[in-house]
Image 1 (spheres, rainbow, N blue to C red):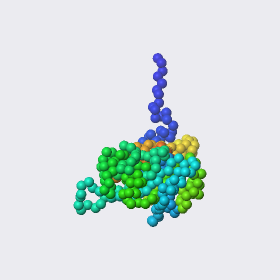
Image 2 (image 1 turned 120 degrees about the vertical axis):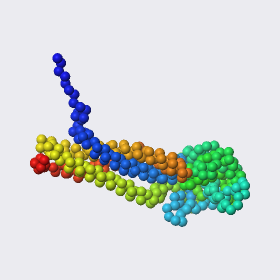
Image 3 (image 1 turned 90 degrees about the horizontal axis):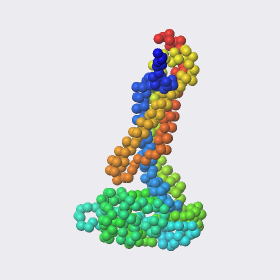
Image 4 (image 1 turned 135 degrees about the vertical axis):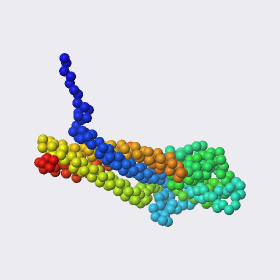
Length: 397
Protein backbone atom coordinates (compact mmCIF):
# COMPACT_ATOMS: atom_id res chain seq x y z
CA UNK A 1 0.00 0.00 0.00
CA UNK A 2 1.48 3.34 -1.04
CA UNK A 3 2.55 5.63 1.76
CA UNK A 4 0.53 8.81 2.12
CA UNK A 5 2.60 11.95 2.76
CA UNK A 6 0.73 14.66 4.65
CA UNK A 7 1.27 18.14 3.30
CA UNK A 8 1.90 20.88 5.86
CA UNK A 9 -0.73 23.65 6.09
CA UNK A 10 -0.13 26.78 4.03
CA UNK A 11 0.67 28.89 7.08
CA UNK A 12 3.44 26.51 8.20
CA UNK A 13 5.15 26.81 4.84
CA UNK A 14 5.58 30.60 5.18
CA UNK A 15 8.68 32.37 6.54
CA UNK A 16 8.91 32.83 10.29
CA UNK A 17 8.12 36.55 10.07
CA UNK A 18 4.89 35.88 8.14
CA UNK A 19 3.85 33.04 10.47
CA UNK A 20 4.40 35.30 13.47
CA UNK A 21 2.15 38.02 12.04
CA UNK A 22 -0.56 35.54 11.02
CA UNK A 23 -0.74 34.12 14.53
CA UNK A 24 -1.46 37.60 15.88
CA UNK A 25 -3.77 38.73 13.13
CA UNK A 26 -6.14 40.56 15.49
CA UNK A 27 -3.37 42.83 16.78
CA UNK A 28 -2.06 43.33 13.26
CA UNK A 29 -5.54 44.16 11.97
CA UNK A 30 -6.01 46.75 14.72
CA UNK A 31 -2.73 48.47 13.87
CA UNK A 32 -3.53 48.39 10.15
CA UNK A 33 -6.96 49.96 10.73
CA UNK A 34 -5.61 52.72 12.97
CA UNK A 35 -2.61 53.58 10.82
CA UNK A 36 -4.64 53.24 7.62
CA UNK A 37 -7.18 55.75 8.94
CA UNK A 38 -4.38 58.18 9.85
CA UNK A 39 -2.72 57.76 6.44
CA UNK A 40 -6.06 58.14 4.69
CA UNK A 41 -6.67 61.45 6.42
CA UNK A 42 -3.11 62.57 5.67
CA UNK A 43 -3.39 61.64 1.99
CA UNK A 44 -6.74 63.43 1.77
CA UNK A 45 -5.30 66.60 3.28
CA UNK A 46 -2.29 66.41 0.96
CA UNK A 47 -4.62 65.93 -2.01
CA UNK A 48 -6.68 68.93 -0.90
CA UNK A 49 -3.48 71.00 -0.64
CA UNK A 50 -2.61 69.83 -4.14
CA UNK A 51 -6.10 70.67 -5.35
CA UNK A 52 -5.98 74.14 -3.79
CA UNK A 53 -2.60 74.84 -5.36
CA UNK A 54 -3.73 73.54 -8.75
CA UNK A 55 -6.69 75.95 -8.71
CA UNK A 56 -4.14 78.76 -8.97
CA UNK A 57 -1.21 77.22 -10.82
CA UNK A 58 -3.06 74.83 -13.13
CA UNK A 59 -3.94 77.39 -15.79
CA UNK A 60 -0.34 78.59 -16.09
CA UNK A 61 0.99 75.03 -16.22
CA UNK A 62 -1.52 73.94 -18.87
CA UNK A 63 -1.47 76.99 -21.13
CA UNK A 64 1.13 77.15 -23.87
CA UNK A 65 1.80 80.83 -23.14
CA UNK A 66 5.44 81.45 -22.28
CA UNK A 67 5.62 85.05 -21.03
CA UNK A 68 3.47 87.61 -19.24
CA UNK A 69 4.28 91.32 -19.67
CA UNK A 70 3.06 93.79 -17.06
CA UNK A 71 3.89 97.21 -15.68
CA UNK A 72 7.22 97.51 -13.89
CA UNK A 73 6.67 96.96 -10.19
CA UNK A 74 3.43 95.06 -10.72
CA UNK A 75 2.84 91.45 -9.80
CA UNK A 76 0.66 88.68 -11.16
CA UNK A 77 0.54 87.02 -7.72
CA UNK A 78 0.03 89.55 -4.89
CA UNK A 79 1.80 88.41 -1.73
CA UNK A 80 1.41 91.59 0.34
CA UNK A 81 -1.52 93.99 0.86
CA UNK A 82 -1.53 96.71 -1.75
CA UNK A 83 0.26 94.71 -4.43
CA UNK A 84 -1.38 94.47 -7.83
CA UNK A 85 -0.94 94.28 -11.56
CA UNK A 86 -0.79 97.95 -12.39
CA UNK A 87 -1.66 98.82 -15.98
CA UNK A 88 0.01 99.21 -19.35
CA UNK A 89 -1.14 102.43 -20.99
CA UNK A 90 -0.99 103.03 -24.75
CA UNK A 91 -1.90 99.37 -25.07
CA UNK A 92 -2.43 99.32 -28.83
CA UNK A 93 1.11 100.56 -29.48
CA UNK A 94 2.68 98.20 -26.93
CA UNK A 95 0.90 95.18 -28.40
CA UNK A 96 2.06 96.17 -31.87
CA UNK A 97 5.64 96.40 -30.58
CA UNK A 98 5.42 92.96 -29.00
CA UNK A 99 3.86 91.35 -32.08
CA UNK A 100 6.60 92.77 -34.27
CA UNK A 101 9.45 91.08 -32.38
CA UNK A 102 11.15 88.06 -34.00
CA UNK A 103 9.99 84.70 -32.69
CA UNK A 104 6.71 86.02 -31.25
CA UNK A 105 3.87 83.77 -32.36
CA UNK A 106 0.93 85.39 -30.58
CA UNK A 107 0.19 88.31 -28.24
CA UNK A 108 -3.06 88.71 -26.29
CA UNK A 109 -3.91 91.78 -24.24
CA UNK A 110 -6.02 91.36 -21.09
CA UNK A 111 -7.90 93.96 -19.06
CA UNK A 112 -10.26 93.27 -16.14
CA UNK A 113 -13.05 95.66 -15.14
CA UNK A 114 -16.26 95.32 -13.08
CA UNK A 115 -19.47 95.83 -15.05
CA UNK A 116 -22.98 96.18 -13.71
CA UNK A 117 -25.58 93.68 -14.80
CA UNK A 118 -28.75 95.38 -15.89
CA UNK A 119 -31.87 93.27 -15.24
CA UNK A 120 -34.18 92.73 -18.19
CA UNK A 121 -37.12 93.55 -15.92
CA UNK A 122 -36.78 96.49 -13.47
CA UNK A 123 -36.40 95.19 -9.92
CA UNK A 124 -36.57 97.46 -6.91
CA UNK A 125 -34.77 97.19 -3.58
CA UNK A 126 -32.05 94.91 -4.92
CA UNK A 127 -28.38 95.92 -4.89
CA UNK A 128 -26.73 96.18 -8.31
CA UNK A 129 -25.18 92.92 -9.47
CA UNK A 130 -21.65 93.20 -10.85
CA UNK A 131 -19.71 90.88 -13.11
CA UNK A 132 -15.95 90.76 -13.35
CA UNK A 133 -15.48 91.39 -17.05
CA UNK A 134 -12.21 90.40 -18.73
CA UNK A 135 -11.54 92.05 -22.05
CA UNK A 136 -9.42 90.09 -24.52
CA UNK A 137 -7.54 91.67 -27.43
CA UNK A 138 -5.94 89.24 -29.88
CA UNK A 139 -6.31 85.70 -31.15
CA UNK A 140 -6.25 83.65 -27.95
CA UNK A 141 -6.81 80.50 -29.99
CA UNK A 142 -3.35 80.91 -31.53
CA UNK A 143 -1.76 80.05 -28.17
CA UNK A 144 -1.77 76.27 -27.58
CA UNK A 145 -4.10 75.17 -24.76
CA UNK A 146 -4.81 78.78 -23.78
CA UNK A 147 -8.56 78.36 -24.21
CA UNK A 148 -10.62 76.09 -21.97
CA UNK A 149 -14.04 76.05 -23.65
CA UNK A 150 -16.44 73.65 -21.92
CA UNK A 151 -19.38 74.26 -24.26
CA UNK A 152 -20.13 76.46 -27.24
CA UNK A 153 -17.26 78.41 -28.77
CA UNK A 154 -14.90 81.32 -28.13
CA UNK A 155 -15.52 85.00 -28.87
CA UNK A 156 -15.79 86.27 -32.43
CA UNK A 157 -17.74 89.54 -32.18
CA UNK A 158 -18.16 92.51 -29.84
CA UNK A 159 -21.73 91.56 -28.89
CA UNK A 160 -20.73 88.14 -27.54
CA UNK A 161 -19.65 86.92 -24.12
CA UNK A 162 -18.12 83.70 -22.80
CA UNK A 163 -18.93 82.93 -19.17
CA UNK A 164 -16.52 81.27 -16.78
CA UNK A 165 -17.74 77.84 -15.61
CA UNK A 166 -18.27 78.99 -12.01
CA UNK A 167 -20.14 82.13 -13.08
CA UNK A 168 -22.37 80.14 -15.43
CA UNK A 169 -23.27 77.71 -12.64
CA UNK A 170 -23.94 80.46 -10.13
CA UNK A 171 -26.20 82.46 -12.43
CA UNK A 172 -27.86 79.50 -14.13
CA UNK A 173 -26.77 80.66 -17.58
CA UNK A 174 -25.89 78.57 -20.61
CA UNK A 175 -25.03 78.88 -24.28
CA UNK A 176 -27.86 80.61 -26.13
CA UNK A 177 -28.88 82.88 -23.21
CA UNK A 178 -28.30 86.61 -23.11
CA UNK A 179 -26.74 88.82 -20.45
CA UNK A 180 -27.33 92.58 -20.21
CA UNK A 181 -24.29 94.48 -18.93
CA UNK A 182 -24.40 98.27 -18.62
CA UNK A 183 -27.62 98.25 -20.71
CA UNK A 184 -26.03 96.33 -23.58
CA UNK A 185 -27.32 92.86 -24.35
CA UNK A 186 -24.62 90.27 -25.02
CA UNK A 187 -25.17 86.77 -26.39
CA UNK A 188 -23.67 83.90 -24.41
CA UNK A 189 -21.79 81.92 -27.04
CA UNK A 190 -19.68 79.73 -24.77
CA UNK A 191 -18.85 78.56 -21.29
CA UNK A 192 -15.12 78.53 -20.60
CA UNK A 193 -12.16 80.77 -19.92
CA UNK A 194 -8.82 82.07 -21.13
CA UNK A 195 -6.19 80.31 -19.03
CA UNK A 196 -3.87 82.72 -17.24
CA UNK A 197 -6.14 85.73 -17.73
CA UNK A 198 -7.00 85.94 -14.02
CA UNK A 199 -6.78 83.91 -10.83
CA UNK A 200 -10.58 84.35 -10.75
CA UNK A 201 -11.13 83.32 -14.37
CA UNK A 202 -13.73 80.68 -13.48
CA UNK A 203 -15.98 83.41 -12.14
CA UNK A 204 -15.45 86.03 -14.86
CA UNK A 205 -17.20 87.03 -18.06
CA UNK A 206 -14.93 87.17 -21.13
CA UNK A 207 -15.58 89.62 -23.96
CA UNK A 208 -13.58 91.66 -26.43
CA UNK A 209 -11.42 94.47 -25.07
CA UNK A 210 -13.33 96.93 -27.22
CA UNK A 211 -16.56 95.98 -25.45
CA UNK A 212 -15.01 96.42 -22.01
CA UNK A 213 -13.59 99.80 -23.09
CA UNK A 214 -17.00 101.00 -24.24
CA UNK A 215 -19.07 99.67 -21.35
CA UNK A 216 -16.58 100.46 -18.57
CA UNK A 217 -15.21 103.67 -20.09
CA UNK A 218 -11.74 102.19 -19.92
CA UNK A 219 -9.05 103.95 -21.91
CA UNK A 220 -6.44 102.42 -24.15
CA UNK A 221 -4.91 100.21 -21.50
CA UNK A 222 -4.44 96.57 -20.56
CA UNK A 223 -3.47 94.92 -17.32
CA UNK A 224 -0.89 92.68 -18.99
CA UNK A 225 0.05 90.90 -22.18
CA UNK A 226 0.16 87.14 -22.72
CA UNK A 227 2.94 86.17 -25.13
CA UNK A 228 3.64 82.91 -26.92
CA UNK A 229 7.22 82.79 -28.25
CA UNK A 230 9.45 80.32 -30.03
CA UNK A 231 12.44 81.23 -27.81
CA UNK A 232 11.07 82.58 -24.52
CA UNK A 233 14.45 83.63 -23.13
CA UNK A 234 15.42 85.67 -26.17
CA UNK A 235 11.94 87.14 -26.48
CA UNK A 236 11.92 88.18 -22.81
CA UNK A 237 15.18 90.07 -23.29
CA UNK A 238 13.86 91.69 -26.46
CA UNK A 239 10.64 92.77 -24.77
CA UNK A 240 12.55 94.32 -21.87
CA UNK A 241 14.77 96.29 -24.24
CA UNK A 242 12.08 97.39 -26.71
CA UNK A 243 9.19 98.27 -24.39
CA UNK A 244 9.88 100.69 -21.55
CA UNK A 245 8.76 100.34 -17.92
CA UNK A 246 7.73 96.69 -18.00
CA UNK A 247 8.46 93.46 -16.16
CA UNK A 248 8.44 90.10 -17.91
CA UNK A 249 7.30 87.03 -15.98
CA UNK A 250 7.84 83.50 -17.23
CA UNK A 251 5.95 80.41 -16.14
CA UNK A 252 8.56 79.39 -13.56
CA UNK A 253 8.39 82.75 -11.80
CA UNK A 254 4.60 82.61 -11.62
CA UNK A 255 4.57 79.09 -10.22
CA UNK A 256 7.22 80.01 -7.62
CA UNK A 257 5.18 83.03 -6.51
CA UNK A 258 2.01 80.93 -6.20
CA UNK A 259 3.88 78.27 -4.20
CA UNK A 260 5.11 81.01 -1.87
CA UNK A 261 1.58 82.35 -1.50
CA UNK A 262 0.13 78.91 -0.78
CA UNK A 263 2.89 77.93 1.68
CA UNK A 264 1.81 80.76 3.97
CA UNK A 265 -1.77 79.55 4.13
CA UNK A 266 -0.94 75.84 4.46
CA UNK A 267 1.11 76.01 7.68
CA UNK A 268 -1.76 74.81 9.87
CA UNK A 269 -2.50 71.96 7.45
CA UNK A 270 1.11 70.79 7.61
CA UNK A 271 1.02 70.91 11.42
CA UNK A 272 -2.11 68.74 11.44
CA UNK A 273 -0.48 66.27 9.03
CA UNK A 274 2.65 66.07 11.20
CA UNK A 275 0.58 65.53 14.33
CA UNK A 276 -1.45 62.75 12.70
CA UNK A 277 1.71 60.94 11.57
CA UNK A 278 3.31 61.37 15.00
CA UNK A 279 0.29 59.89 16.80
CA UNK A 280 0.16 57.00 14.32
CA UNK A 281 3.85 56.29 14.94
CA UNK A 282 3.40 56.37 18.71
CA UNK A 283 0.42 54.00 18.44
CA UNK A 284 2.32 51.47 16.32
CA UNK A 285 5.35 51.66 18.60
CA UNK A 286 3.27 51.08 21.73
CA UNK A 287 1.40 48.17 20.13
CA UNK A 288 4.62 46.54 18.99
CA UNK A 289 6.16 47.02 22.45
CA UNK A 290 3.10 45.41 24.01
CA UNK A 291 3.40 42.55 21.54
CA UNK A 292 7.06 42.04 22.48
CA UNK A 293 6.13 41.85 26.17
CA UNK A 294 3.36 39.34 25.47
CA UNK A 295 5.73 37.21 23.36
CA UNK A 296 8.67 37.33 25.74
CA UNK A 297 8.40 33.59 26.34
CA UNK A 298 8.41 32.87 22.60
CA UNK A 299 11.36 35.20 22.01
CA UNK A 300 13.26 33.66 24.93
CA UNK A 301 12.72 30.17 23.52
CA UNK A 302 13.98 31.28 20.10
CA UNK A 303 17.06 32.82 21.68
CA UNK A 304 17.66 29.69 23.77
CA UNK A 305 17.65 27.37 20.74
CA UNK A 306 20.16 29.58 18.94
CA UNK A 307 18.03 31.68 16.63
CA UNK A 308 20.22 34.64 15.49
CA UNK A 309 19.54 38.13 16.83
CA UNK A 310 18.87 39.42 13.30
CA UNK A 311 16.00 36.92 12.98
CA UNK A 312 14.55 38.11 16.28
CA UNK A 313 14.81 41.70 15.07
CA UNK A 314 13.20 40.77 11.76
CA UNK A 315 10.10 39.58 13.61
CA UNK A 316 9.45 43.06 14.97
CA UNK A 317 10.58 44.94 11.86
CA UNK A 318 8.54 42.56 9.70
CA UNK A 319 5.43 43.32 11.74
CA UNK A 320 6.01 47.05 11.29
CA UNK A 321 6.63 46.66 7.55
CA UNK A 322 3.52 44.54 7.06
CA UNK A 323 1.46 47.12 8.93
CA UNK A 324 2.94 49.90 6.78
CA UNK A 325 2.14 48.12 3.52
CA UNK A 326 -1.40 47.11 4.44
CA UNK A 327 -2.12 50.46 6.09
CA UNK A 328 -1.07 52.25 2.90
CA UNK A 329 -3.60 50.24 0.89
CA UNK A 330 -6.31 50.97 3.46
CA UNK A 331 -5.32 54.65 3.51
CA UNK A 332 -5.53 54.91 -0.29
CA UNK A 333 -9.02 53.40 -0.24
CA UNK A 334 -10.15 55.78 2.51
CA UNK A 335 -8.63 58.77 0.74
CA UNK A 336 -10.27 57.85 -2.56
CA UNK A 337 -13.67 57.57 -0.90
CA UNK A 338 -13.24 60.90 0.88
CA UNK A 339 -12.02 62.48 -2.36
CA UNK A 340 -15.07 61.23 -4.22
CA UNK A 341 -17.31 62.78 -1.56
CA UNK A 342 -15.35 66.06 -1.52
CA UNK A 343 -15.60 66.51 -5.29
CA UNK A 344 -19.20 65.36 -5.69
CA UNK A 345 -20.70 67.11 -2.65
CA UNK A 346 -18.46 69.79 -1.14
CA UNK A 347 -16.87 71.08 -4.36
CA UNK A 348 -20.23 71.21 -6.09
CA UNK A 349 -21.74 73.20 -3.22
CA UNK A 350 -18.84 75.70 -3.49
CA UNK A 351 -19.23 75.96 -7.29
CA UNK A 352 -15.81 74.42 -7.84
CA UNK A 353 -14.78 71.73 -10.30
CA UNK A 354 -12.59 69.82 -7.87
CA UNK A 355 -10.79 70.27 -4.56
CA UNK A 356 -9.20 66.81 -4.41
CA UNK A 357 -6.13 66.20 -6.56
CA UNK A 358 -4.30 62.91 -6.03
CA UNK A 359 -2.00 60.98 -8.32
CA UNK A 360 0.39 58.04 -8.22
CA UNK A 361 3.15 60.33 -6.93
CA UNK A 362 1.09 61.26 -3.87
CA UNK A 363 0.36 57.61 -3.05
CA UNK A 364 4.03 56.70 -3.55
CA UNK A 365 4.98 59.44 -1.10
CA UNK A 366 2.44 58.11 1.38
CA UNK A 367 3.91 54.61 1.02
CA UNK A 368 7.43 55.88 1.70
CA UNK A 369 6.17 57.85 4.69
CA UNK A 370 4.46 54.72 6.00
CA UNK A 371 7.67 52.68 5.64
CA UNK A 372 9.70 55.34 7.45
CA UNK A 373 7.00 55.55 10.11
CA UNK A 374 7.08 51.78 10.58
CA UNK A 375 10.88 51.73 10.76
CA UNK A 376 10.95 54.46 13.42
CA UNK A 377 8.13 52.83 15.37
CA UNK A 378 10.04 49.50 15.40
CA UNK A 379 13.25 50.87 16.93
CA UNK A 380 12.24 50.70 20.60
CA UNK A 381 10.32 47.39 20.36
CA UNK A 382 13.27 45.81 18.51
CA UNK A 383 15.67 46.85 21.26
CA UNK A 384 13.34 45.35 23.85
CA UNK A 385 13.07 42.14 21.87
CA UNK A 386 16.86 41.82 21.64
CA UNK A 387 17.20 42.57 25.35
CA UNK A 388 15.16 39.51 26.36
CA UNK A 389 17.26 37.16 28.54
CA UNK A 390 16.23 33.53 27.90
CA UNK A 391 17.26 32.25 31.34
CA UNK A 392 15.31 34.86 33.29
CA UNK A 393 12.16 34.60 31.19
CA UNK A 394 12.11 30.81 31.18
CA UNK A 395 12.77 30.73 34.91
CA UNK A 396 9.83 33.06 35.61
CA UNK A 397 7.54 31.05 33.32
